[in-house]
Length: 238
Image (tube, rainbow, N blue to C red; front, side, top):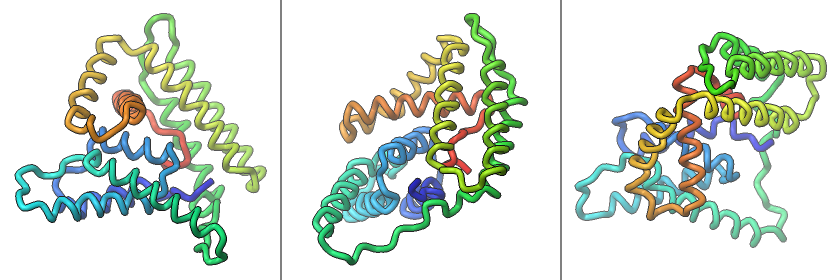
């Protein structure tokens, strides 16, 4: 597993510093960071793209509008990722590649086990909706039980592959999201989607249809988790 332990905080810090403080990242911003992470875009590419976007903004003769969203940087982030990929291909014949960080740095069992158990506690304590014959609490309790089992397994075998653990957590998250979508009233889901469309409107021309679809999905998921005070289960959120 590539070490993106500080992926989110590094991006947040760089964007807020270049913007000059002000408001914190929005739900839309966090959802966009998730799409970059899921797409495997290196942290360095995101930071380069942010810097390039603000360098260009700073050169504009008129700055009537302040940069209020990471979406402003999205095109240059993708361009930076592509440039890094091409540079890596061009340098593949050399032996001067920089050393890679440890695959498990930041993901030691002593850190992961409490994270799993803390999330199990939150799932067990959550007040979840019951609608359409869907037992949200039952799904959450099953997920909590699995998290505790995974924590025990990791304690017993600290050398277990983190990639396998992350896949299990991804499956649990997907079940959790499906449960929330099924048990939350349609009107609330429509309201959240409408908010996502409104927030995305100024940036649609800067992103592909696939990016927009993924961003809307991440936006809805994040809002549902916030509504029911549920945690993200992935190791990236430790």
